[in-house]
Length: 345
Image (cartoon, rainbow, N blue to C red; front, top):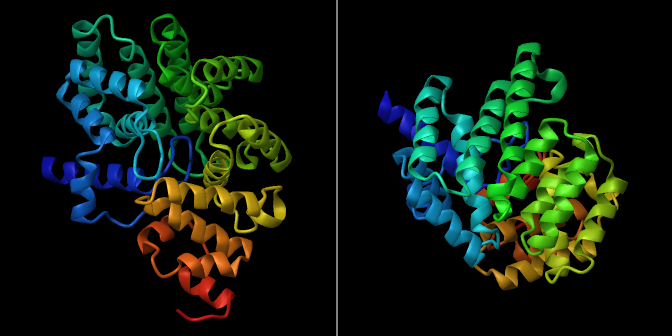
């Protein structure tokens, strides 16, 4: 039983990290089971290392990891912050573990507080746990598909998570992850927009280059989450206006919010996104992070949806098929895109 649980856990964590699935997405696409080589690489990643420290109850190692990633601004092969990857892995760990392990994980959190009483990250970790357990209880699906019992548990646990993250500000706001988690949790706990806006502005002022804060706050403008494409476009344009990564951030944010919105096949006709600017940003990302298979797959998938055959075939032969599969909406495949441009590969 333990061996099977471990394998299931590995596959779930690997699927999350290898396909850039995101906390807060109610129905993430199912990814192919990762290959052995992928899992071995994942075991060396900061996200895996952070979760392994949690499972060991090693607060000093986990604290050290968070502090190191905060100070270094280290990024992965696709340019994502490894600090973001680490906290996402921790969230996913709490979300996927069965409820009969909650007592074990609660004891680990209590041990963390005893053994690292001055930790800035410890209080944030408890909030992440409550948030992960809220999403596990809710289940997958759209809001209208959630059962009343799931909605009640979701609301109760998010309320507790919000109280926890708010109470942690004095100790933890020196870390960008406090702002990131406060924005995610606050939105799910139905905190008022003015409060979330204040948190976002304060966080961006302190950590202007840590763009996962845009991910967390910008979800409020995504149509699937009650926003509109017009509001989303205004937010993205304002966010990148003075940011040093410019078009790269434009492409990264739109790709992220597209994922959060369920990857609408008609995004380029229904929204105000500029494909010219998005293509420019994705190509810059590929130049800056040449080992990033996810970035190339995203460019290819977006080119197919935007009707850009030149960009599509420029990168078609070298795309990672599994990555492409993970970033495309239902109803889109390489064969469909090939046929769309009437050219065989």
